[in-house]
Structures are given as C-alpha cells and as structure tokens.
Image (cartoon, rainbow, N blue to C red; front, side, top):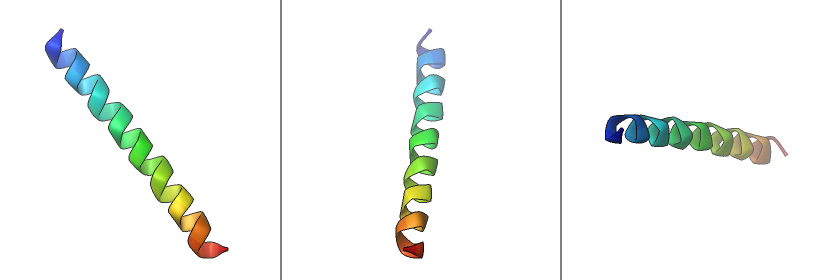
Length: 30
C-alpha cells in the first residue's frame, strides 16, 4: 500500500509541474 501511495503522489506531482510550466510559457508569450 505504501508503494502505491508513493507512486500516486509522484504522478500528481508531475502533473502539477507540467501545468505550472504551461502557465509560465503562456505568461512569457503575453
């Protein structure tokens, strides 16, 4: 169970990072 929870947290972390990067790019374009 611990392993699954850790993997899930990593996936969420990666997703958040991608979204943040996209937002930064949009801000730079503007």
